[in-house]
Image (cartoon, rainbow, N blue to C red; front, side):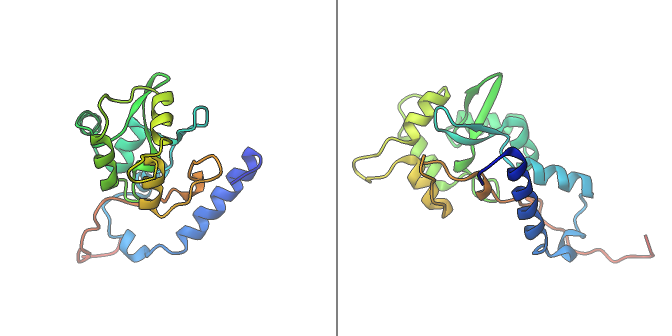
Length: 184
């Protein structure tokens, strides 16, 4: 996606429309979620912070992860504290780089292994960008490269996966269809 903000919006809406055509609506209608809750979850799956300087890329806010993953703030914090998620202070809140998450909102297994190699937690965008882009001599890959490979994405010329490569999913398991006793 390149161009003006309006061009980006048009591309995003077009991609959403294309994706919606592939949804098995019979399965979706069985969910106890209403349309508004489902729409909230779909939009929460989009990163809302994009850090280009330094080159971190698309990030989620804590609130976005809470809605998308159906978790509590405490659970997200605990995952970050136990080095299962990479999060850092940016502005007035903590953000989480999107490249660590699969299309289902779960961190890639490679992320935990990468975070285990850190001697101290990364605390800001500069540290995160430097770490993501530092090539390991043993593997000849950077953490960004490893995570992009795990996701099947190709980084752009700046090493940042494209914003359009984020997938929208519904994480709630679908419940079996209940017998109906009448019309709605």
